[in-house]
Length: 367
Image (cartoon, rainbow, N blue to C red; front, side, top):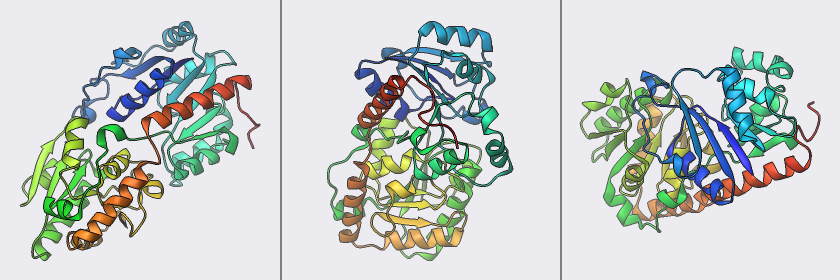
């Protein structure tokens, strides 16, 4: 099949997923902004990828002209087109509206329903704004599916499992409790911005360090405007932005992932950490929590924005016995096997095939 992707950026885990999709015999077209088009806010996260090895890649700095992009995608003669974010680009929406009726049109969405005014507006206008560009929604979690259903997608028109870590890269053999305990460090991986909870991380780690007799260190991978909040705290090592293989190595040399995001639509890093055998501390407003973190089994869910609770959770984690850490690590590794890049590719391939056989469009009428 021929599959086109209209994206708002490439990542390491997307690269792994698309490689697997290509290995199933699919021809791929990927349209995405380059790092300059993403602006200063994203300039700190430039992945070194080789997309041209498995796909035709088209990057842009300024928003592409709608007519030009429509013609480009139509010339590719896709069997399916997948678009990231239903309100992202006028040109992307134009493509979705102008492909032949037999082309399967899939909206990739990971947002969580927060009852925000804009979300209520999207729900009220979905027949005009969403239904006209997408036949199905592909979501990573039940939390995103809840939002998709509120935008008018029936259960039959939801494709589940849109995101997966590169488990081959991040996977770890079984880890002993003694080895994990010897690492004596928490790990944060993410951009240092407000919605990722960098402020909570800084405040909570300061409190944890001041109230714990023998505290673990904190390693921070990422960059962003809130870097100064963490840089001068004793016990903190700042690594800046790292490529996925470097992150994978660092995960296997750490004892626990911390992700204190105020808002985290999904959080593939949670899956990556689970594959690496890490116990996990994760905020309750993280989409990956229901699938990748079982409270008390491979870590704890911590209330977003509560500095004191985060400091307490770090203290609880660093006081665990090697046996308890090993048990959490084993559960993380087991949970991580639920998803994979290969499984993602197979699922998408099969979902597109069956929707093509049905003639394109939605499988059932919108409610």
